[in-house]
Length: 125
Length: 142
Length: 281
Image (spheres, each protein chain N blue to C red):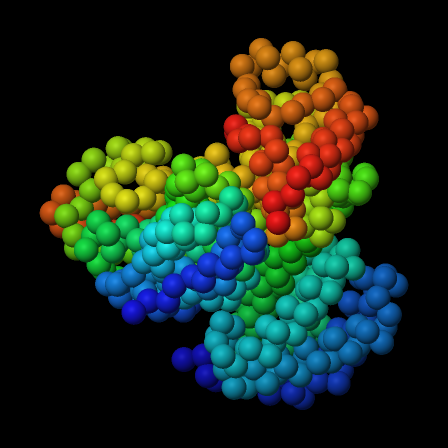
């Protein structure tokens, strides 16, 4: 009944671009879909583009952290790209620092970050 | 005229029900529209909408659904937005505990109430075990 | 009850309109001594007199009533303009009060006097209103200036390709931190910068609250995908930080802006190298 967030595959990277205000169920569905797709496609990296998101609350924040952890277990690195300044400031105030989640300014730098991650191994934060 | 002593005056208000997941999304959009109307800066808009999102989810998850009332408020020369959530759920047995970072009885990160309090300029919570919860947040334009 | 009196008053003011206005303008012009042109004063006062007359005719002595809307809006404009031009609230109010002086010689009967006393109350009320508007206008000017100062005091500069910096000068409070943070984070996007340097050479002291603000800025930049370095930590400040037990955690701090820039350039170089080996796509 609810919409699902599309997951695109480019080479060994899965790209998730969130374009709509997320309902909680969509967040949970995305978590399921993505775990399945990582296994199916043997992806090595996941890029989640949140540049269209006007807010990230603790629920979505937790989803990002969980996806990063799940994909790591499945052998893929996750990078969250395009967080808006206002969103970053709000998350800090909310008390959420997204520790353990790799971030980059935009898609291009996100892919660069994934390459580095692959060459260096996991970076601790 | 001492600001803070004077009662805030409401100039526009809207009430809606929060009974399903989709209502949380609608609540965010309503609060955003009011925040723009009250000329809150982009960052303050984002903070208020995020706080409202946390509280709307609480109302749904812990209160078993309820209502949200959004209004533009003025006090002296300042304008702001007030968002009030009301439910008739089980209430919060231990307020101090519920306002502690990281404490959660549900599916969140335990930042809902304490986070919303930090994001708002004013925060007021009344809860009675068995009777329900009433939370009010206000954000003022700078 | 006051109907007769306000009728009487309206009659008095209508009969002597030309004379009274002329005298009023002369008195006000002399008190403001050349700081406003005679033409300006003439226009303001003629309009005001007319509006007052209309208001008295329609609304009697209730200065807070609807009939006085026009008078109040004229007074608001007058008071605002005078406040901006640097007149004191007294000077503006006295302009209004001097109308009493104008009327005094024209009083002939006891009824006139009692009508005059009523009118005097009206003028007092309106005079107080101009003082209120004056204070409000000054407040607006002050808050507008505070805002401008906030904007002025936080320039974000591009230091190198991919590196932006903010030299902070003065005390950091939460309002200012929010502006600095917002500008810095936005410039990361605009400049496609992966490194930010916050230089605190010009910050007189660092207490726990200031440190908290700095930490938040660094964490926010990090969440957007950029690294943030704090530079310009003077010896005394380093001592305070340690004495207060402030934990900067894994945040990079450098003594000088030059050190921070060198660090950022090295990091950018490292990232470029590692990204070039192999390739994910």
